[in-house]
Image (cartoon, rainbow, N blue to C red; front, side):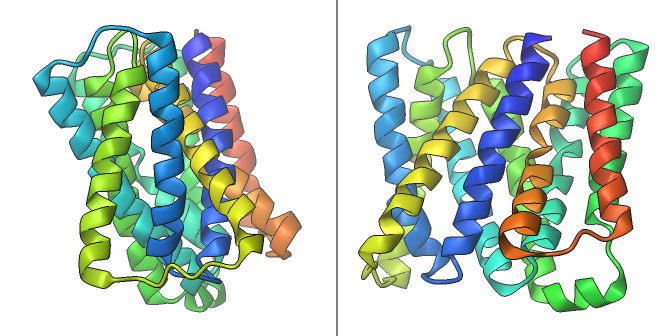
Length: 279
């Protein structure tokens, strides 16, 4: 039960972070958003790890965590750019379709959820698919490019979930630090080639700082969740960040929820309830 609760908490934090990231990417470049927000997360993760203590990572776990961090910043770059180009709610839900990657990996590794939990995972994924399903005009509004970028981001997010689980031990604080360091290093390499403008209006800084804070909070909650629950189930709970982003887009940006999407949100929540009921 704790693993599912932490997975849901991580989805809420990711949902807020993604919404803010997509929103700011409409005003400055996605790379600039990441160059400001990700180092904030690295500093917070490092401070927490130093306070919490714990054993250092093995070379294997560090390599996996660094690779996962690199994968997720590339995914976030594609994700933010997609939201800058198209509908935030459409892009957010397509981005959640990477959840089958960690679910399948968990099952291959030996996860054996109870029958109601397995059914809940299927229902939860179905809900995410329903949320992503939109009438043709909405998809055209999002544009092929933004949907393609969102699909690429989904693969990166799924890979990150898998890597974070593989590298996280009983004390995952240093795993988060390694992942954030890998992400920041990747961004610095990208910045050396792209040379993005770092001229940022002061009014944008609070949102950019909040992105980093919510993102590292979500990463930490998910890493702990994988130590208290099956990856195949925790990943489904964590994937509900798309529903949070969709709701924020509805109430903040006024993006309308079509009936299939509204139904999808309720179906996804029902799936999580089934998973929790079997815990």
